[in-house]
Image 1 (cartoon, one colour):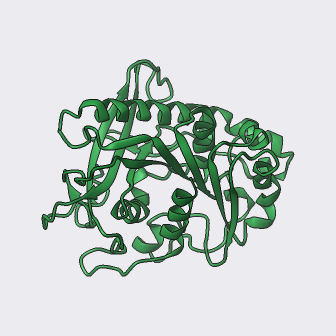
Image 2: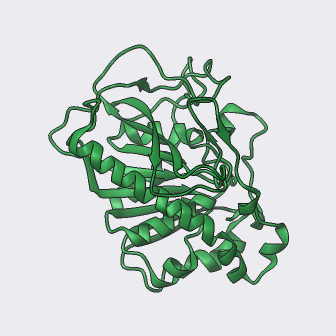
Length: 322
């Protein structure tokens, strides 16, 4: 779906006006933005890395979506993390979903390693204001997860590569990240199943009949590129895949994807990454865009540069391309 890919790119490459009450850009679409947070539990999967006694996998999921509501209340940034309540977003907490005759396309966000899902609020609010339902997923162990009861799970050292790994061969890099990609892939598909249930009958009355899950996409960053690429390759509902400095796993890269693809690379990473990213091209079954962005760094797609002056806004090295 070319329009989804192009919308992704525009939301990242163009910055909106910064609001007086928030450090985040004002969403530039025609709709207001609502947000909600879910604590989703996959009781069918063990999660031994979190706690040997846990017999389930707990995900934190935040959605941003278009709304007709005009309430003045704005959701706090990082709604379940203590100490961030003073930073406001542009989204209305618990707002109704836009009243529209058609269903809304869904975009899942697969974060980078150690990056909480709320770190993509600016991108999510922008696309939500243009009619997309954005759903960011915190995957325990690859990401950093904060739970409503105060618990938190840091990223696991198991998924932190040594710099020497990136000296080659790249097949070893692919092998190293296979467990994280597979675990995250299952997370994304589980959330798609939960969204289907909400679409069939949302107890809160917001999302029933509003989601077009057959017209979904994935926006990914860094390690999330492997997670998102694995999910897109295994589910035909995903029509678009966009990743900032994160490659899909080896098998999907070489087999090609049915979805339209956009790969964003900082100018510093491009020379190291292009050989692996370009593997998506020969057997592609849709358009593949490879976009080099000057002045962008590995984490520039996150909210970090907007919230911290010392954030990583410059070019990334090979090590950062997970």
